[in-house]
Structure formats: structure tokens, C-alpha cells
Length: 449
Image (cartoon, rainbow, N blue to C red):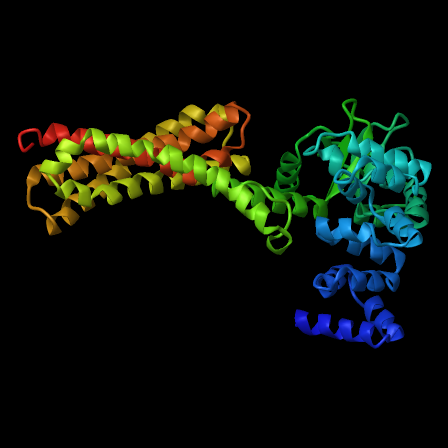
């Protein structure tokens, strides 16, 4: 479907059927236009932008990959560039400008009105992952002293220019947030009622310095379509809508998945990431893990006498390693996910550890019994079977506890907990598993060595 649409556009451009092209584009939603043009070369993208309405062009441009945006900026005519920059939402504009060289930013800011320029610079001054960076400062507010009929009149006169009017924010004379109001409640209220009499006087809000992921959790927990953003003195300065949060959650999930797989974080999609970038983001982690994993060689070398005399132990080394890595990775994934959604906090550390010692013990006993019975296929020596089962038990308990502890430790050190999961904990458990396995075997099988 997508390929056919792109081919049709290429054909219209090649045959210079620009009137038809314009008619086709006008009928499309911005997200559809993005899909239609994403595979076009830059010079043909430029032609498409010439026929898009100004507001649609700004939305389409905002949705493009960063590398596409950078390329198009250098190709747009001055007038088109001005229209797009002026029509972009302030938060999207700030996201674009932070990626650009200072001289380009200065030029683009010159296209804006004084008010828009001020709003954009305000957003750029907030920390990268803060609510202030993604809030929209262009919102509709209502004074608490307004009558319902006056509030409705204000919405009719100003609402079209605002990002959202379904959730309205109520302020006092000093612009302090006093409440929130749903549009439907305003519509069905009596015209002579005061706004303050029908508003929710206990609004859910965030501050400009709150972390974006925290904002996402709050909006998710309270099923909010929009949330007010205040400064430190509770003055209303912006709003964040659910579509902004979808982007935050997607970026956060992508970042966590990449870190859990020991990959450097990339902000572009797969086909917009260069081969060198893909290699660079993986090779550092893989090299570090390779060197770390090699510690296990010294462990095995230290127990070489045991292996030479009881060679059957070598056959079970991959099994012991695998169960340690798998258990630790499972546990860390559970804890990291629970931390991400707010189910677990730092104060819950002792409760989590106690619970995971218990669950690790139960898992270890079950898996140890399975290993004991499984080893009958290779050996009938009771002590060897017992050493395998006991190793599984202890390795599972240790890996379960480490999988729970390491995310807390990472958070304490102000690191992303995702950094210590996946390949890292698997590599760590490979080393620990070998120490446990050969120590137990040496102890139980000392009479056979």
C-alpha cells in the first residue's frame, strides 16, 4: 500500500501533474503525508511541501526523522522555511532547534514574532528531559471570576488557535493555578454560574522541572488528556497533552530496550541510522563484555585439576552458566519494569530483597530437583548429581538476589537501571556460576579427585 502511494506521487511529480498532486495532498492527514513522502528523495520532498497548506506542512515537518529535517532545512526556500518555523508548535520547534548549530538557530529565531521567540527560548532553557522542555506555552486559560457565558465566548474567539480546549485551566489574578475544568462541564453549566463554582479545585499538575517520564506516569494513572505545568510558585506556564506523552513513552521504551541489550542509545529509526553508528553503538559494549567474560577463563583455569579428573563436569558448564544468566535477566527485567511504572520505589528495597530471597529459594529447589533427575542421563554418580543440583540451587538464589539488587544500586548511583540488565548481568553470572559450581564440586567430590 505504502509503496504504491509513493510511486503514484513520483509519477505525478515526473509528469508535472501538480494540480492533481495538490488535490491529493490536501485530502490527506499529516501522518499519512509523512508515510507518503518518507521514501522520496529530498528534491521531491521539497516539491510536495510546496503544495501543502502551511499548518499541514509544519505538522508533517515535525513528524519527519531528524536527518530528513536537517537536509530539508538547507533546501527550503526562505519563504517556505519561514512559514514552517512560524507554524510549528513551540515544543516541536524547540526540539528541532536544540539539534542545530548556533548560527542556524539564530537565523530561524529571526523568523518568529517576539512572543514566539520568547516562548521558544524559554523552552530551550529547561533541562532536556524535563516537563518544561515539551510543554506548550500556547494554551487557553480562564479566570476563576469569569461567568460561564463569558468563558464560552472566550473559547469561541480564541479556541481555534490553541492546541487543546477539551481540558481548561483556571487561574487567579496572579496566574496561579486554581483548578481545572472539562469543556463538557462548562457547556452544560448555567450561563450565570461562576467558573470557580464548577471547576475541580484540586487539580493534578506538574512543575516545569519534573521528569518527563514522571509526567507520563501521572497522566496514565489519572487518565488525563492534558495536564497543566506550573513554575515553582504554582503559576501556570504551559500544558502537556497526551500526544506529547505518547512520544515520551515511545522514546523511553526504545532507550530502555537498547540499554538492556547493551547497545548505545540511538534517537533515529533503523533505516535512518548509519552503518557506522550501528557498529559504534554496539562494539564498545561488546568489547567490554568480552573482556569481562574472559575473567571466567581464570576461574576455570584455577579448577583445571578438578576438570581433568572428573571430565563430566565440563559437559554441564553451559547449563549452569545459562540458568544463572537467565534467572538474573528475568529478575532485573521485572524490577526495572516495576520501577519504570512506579510500582517499586527506592524505599521498597528491603521488601523486594526479602521477597526475592524467598522466590529464589523456591525456584532453586524446583530447578535443582529437575537438574538432579536430568543428570541421570549422563551419570549415576550420586555426588556428581548432588553437586549439580546444589550448584543450581545456589546459583539461582544468587542471580535472583543480584537481579533485584543491581537496579536499586544503579538508581542510587544515578544511572539508568536498564544499563545493568541483559548482557551485563548474564556476563556477571557466568563468572559467579563457575566459581559456585567448581567450589561445590571440589568440596563434594574431593574423595574422587
